[in-house]
Image (cartoon, rainbow, N blue to C red; front, side, top):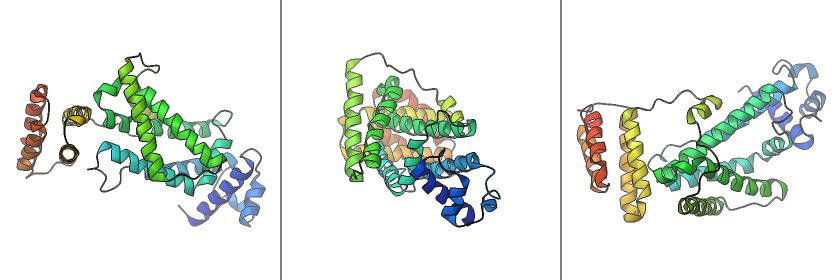
Length: 300
């Protein structure tokens, strides 16, 4: 982003955080910057355009922090959730003005482009929740993913508001682990109860479209690997932590080979599949045979 445009966004953000969007004038923003009023219109058509750009800029920064970083692919799902939640907390702490502005300007009553931007960010957040929940709790929790996503968002928002309005600062590691343990309590309670979920299953294709993401191509190989991952996560208590980590590492490596195919991986694929098969349930024999044919044969 151009330096001048970024300076305007930062000045506007400070003004919106102090007074709110509706109460802030363009003149106040240029006074904050010390520039001529006409200069701002070279970069932004209107105050609404400025707000849309603000939400888009800082929203994308936030989701960049929440994306999987190099070296995190091999982390177990629980640890991956924790480190990404920690980064989200650090972002909020660093950009409190942006968060205050969002709280002051709810999506209701705003112009359509601004509403659309907020809906897009919400959809991205829901996708992030569901992907982590599915990886952590596996297939048994599938009927409750929408409910669990709503519950974890509610928990997180309360600590977020304590930070914003009561200026309570938390230890990021301690808070992330605490939230995950409470999420364990919630999901395990739902599974034990056998209750009918309150929310219907999420339409992931619709969410991806709302989030402005390109359609994800899910191959048969990735579907089979996802099935294996769900089984392995669901039966984690049956094996040691080191073995569980090895199995998740093997799955991550196989996913990488599927997504970025290259020759010469046949023996590696065979070894990873053998490791997974050794610790998997007997009813997955057909899944392993199919994967061996799809991946093992294709990487000869």
